[in-house]
Each structure stands twice: as C-alpha cells, then as structure tokens.
Image (cartoon, rainbow, N blue to C red; front, side, top):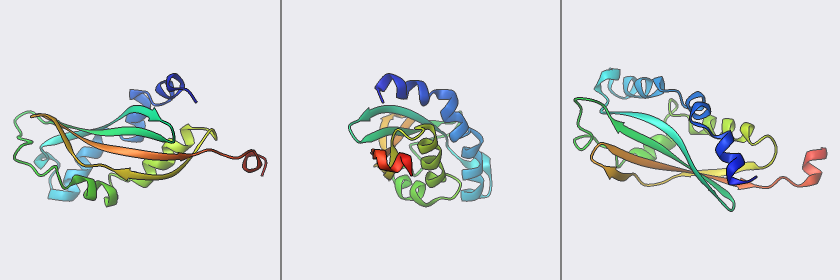
Length: 139
C-alpha cells in the first residue's frame, strides 16, 4: 500500500469514527467522575507509514479555560495502553479492518508524551504490520 492510499484510508472523518470526540468526555468521567474536569480533548490522527509500521498520534488539545501544563499528561502512555475507554485493542482492530487484508496488525506500542506547544501535547501510537502470505489469503 502506498502512502497516498493510506492517507485516503485514514482520513480525519474515518479516524473520528474509530475514536469519536465524545470518548474524551467518557475518559474523564471515568477518571474523575466528571467529564468537565478534563483539561484537554483527545483526537486520533494518522501521521505516516514507515516500512512495517503505521504511525498515529493521540492529539491532546487544551480545553478553553483549562491548563494542560497543570495536568498530568506524561503518565498517559501507560494509562492509554490499558484504559478500556481509550480501547487501543479496539482501535487496532478497526485499523486492521481498514487495511482490508493488505497487511495485518502484529502489535502496537504507545510512545512517550511529547509537548508540541503549551496547549498541544501528543502521545504516539505505533502499529506494527506484518504482510499476509498468499497461503493465508487462500485459507
């Protein structure tokens, strides 16, 4: 699959279906008991394809009137990896479905939080791919 094909598969609209905007509210409601307590909204974005991996990012956009600098975002990779509302295993399943048999998701990893700006932090999501052998397609 080419980069152009992948960009057309992993559009903003498609990723909003995989990781809907209301999931941020559900996450903070579960975490704090109140969805309004969260300092940021979470969104999933496709970045690029590199050899045997797809690179996505969770974008953490500061909410108006909130302070992301005052909030804990550096422990999020561990939290995101396990949290049932973030549901990375479900996200990976959706990504694999969108690949339509051209590749299989063989694993994933959540990277360290990176501060892009005061009001935008990023948590990388790397999806490892394996090619499907012709014998697998026939079975």
